[in-house]
Length: 134
Image (tube, rainbow, N blue to C red):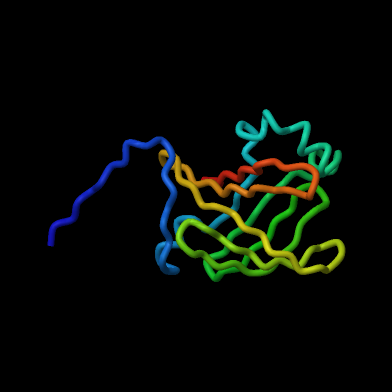
């Protein structure tokens, strides 16, 4: 059986995940992508306060579907599912214990993996980019 390598000429491609086996490359630890966040850093500090600078931000996507994140003092843990390039996480917040649903988009660029979280609180809106750590 022959295998072919298909190269995409687009700089950013959306990935398609159909099974746990395909999900494995995207699992791991993600950090806030400070290069992409640079233009929105003032909004992020406004939304998440100085705790973002003091505590940082990280997101973990486990091979078994476990999901956790923190953004300053905001965060939570739970589970996630993947449908195409959309990751949906059901998360119990650390602070209030409320359940929330987060929708993130899985994006590949060159050899790097990203999660894009379009955040909005009813007043402010910002795209939060997470970059997978190597």
